[in-house]
Length: 271
Ligand SMILES: [Zn+2]
Image (tube, rainbow, N blue to C red; front, side, top):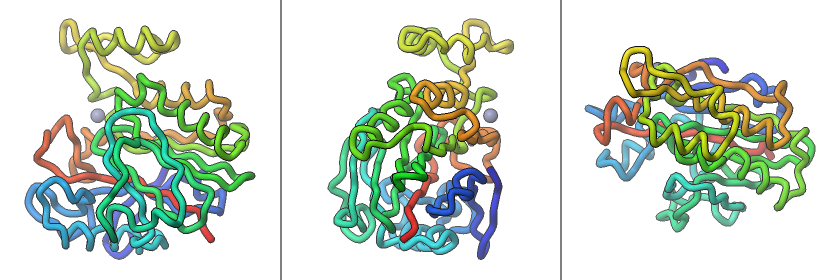
């Protein structure tokens, strides 16, 4: 993963995704936009109290920096579940040109060029998928609830069901989100993970600084879920940026609560 800057806009890209040559993609930072105050500056959420015109300008900037058309974006309301929507050029503009009519999906999939898939994040894990043979892409939002519900596997399964993708052809990436360093949880959350996946214990440890608290490595768990789904380990790139540690670059829900803007992941097949 590398931090890039274009026209003052900072964003992250993944080397393995870029190398496929068939997509445009990025993960945004809060740097390079026009929003002010707690939204400073590249806020990408319309529904958090920020000025709508500022948000649109921010979308234009981040899309322009990555050769994507902001009027082709597709997004909706995410609910920390694992439903995935197959979207087409008919959905382009959903959320930005016209009011979003997509509700209840935390992942999107498409095989159509120029459709710009967008998911929103502020600590929750973004998952990128590119099938280089079938030319199918998917983008998912996987917070701890999505992770415990195995969003990574659900996304690969949808790619297989809808487009007959072979997991071995999929290049994947796990983007900036809350790291093990900061993701402190209580026992009930730990128990959910241990109930849902045997391997989870490898990614959970006692918090040395807080009695009865635990730390969970969501990046490791999502990577392992991708491998269980059949993606080759060598095809998975994992972030090393924690969104809570770097408040110069990111909005963090854990750190800022509702007083914040939103980051976004973008993925689009080139035409
Ligand atoms: Zn951290």
